[in-house]
Amino acid sequence: MRADLAVSAVRWATGTAPGYLALAAAASVVALASALVMQYGFGLPPCDLCIEQRWGFAGAGALAAGGLFAHRVGMSRRAMVAAVGVAFLVTAGLGFRHVGVEQQWWPGPDTCTATGADAATTDELLEAIMNAPLVRCDEIPASLLGLSIAGWVVVSALAMAALAAVALARSRRAAR
Image 1 (tube, rainbow, N blue to C red):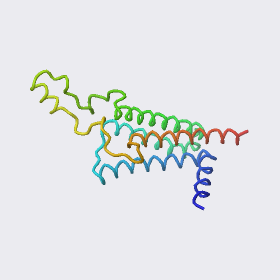
Image 2: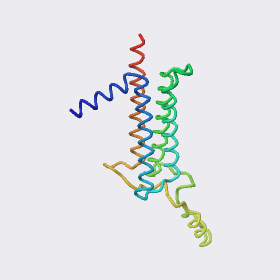
Image 3: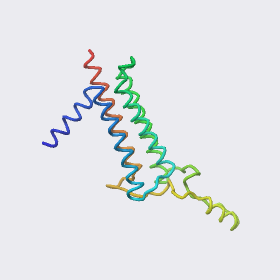
Image 4: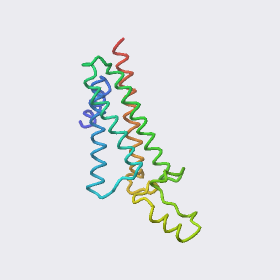
């Protein structure tokens, strides 16, 4: 019965533009609330890249919430679904960037990765230590099922972008 309910919810969310926009707004709120619970409830402060990802979810959520009322000001809800889908793709890109920094595939920004290996003197090393970020972007503070928090950002944002594509395709068929 739960599987039927979940399938029905996904069909509703992808069958209409308002359904998808409501789901996208709710998903963004859940993502942001989860980040705040991890920060304040479990003591996992965010790094600079985590904050960027929060902005991605906030932007997608704001677009989705605004999209629910788009028809009242003459805007197309389909256009808003597309914009929200793109916002989720950008958020997935921000998450992927963070995953790459965590996995040392590429360097992170200077504001959130510790350096000092190139210090020539003890004074330079001390300065590097004193200027090191408090929360590093290149360390994984927590993981679930083998994915870091940034990895789950990628998965969830890509899922929401894919649902936007399905909603657009279904609404296009319905318009014919």
